Length: 109
Image 1 (tube, rainbow, N blue to C red):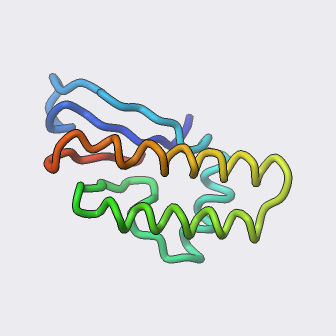
Image 2 (image 1 turned 45 degrees about the vertical axis):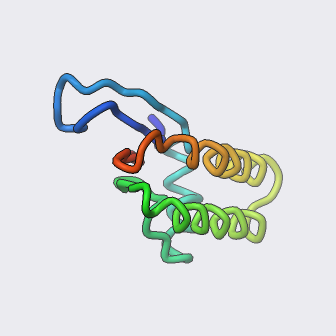
């Protein structure tokens, strides 16, 4: 199991909508141990399990990712640091391109 960033081509509640983007953020175990600690400590609101991210929130989400990356650099070492910063940098790269219109909604779960 893992936590990821997802985009659908319609209402997520509609059984006929299709998944159009799926990007891994972290394994569930890693998310629970490290991401949750960082999210709690930093007061992160958007980049967290169960979130919806709207186009108008893009800049705020990128700021949160930058803060999470800083937290990882302060609190982690070795492979844990490499994994978390690598996943954050990947999401930072993908997030702006994931919005195909201003009506796009991205999901984290």
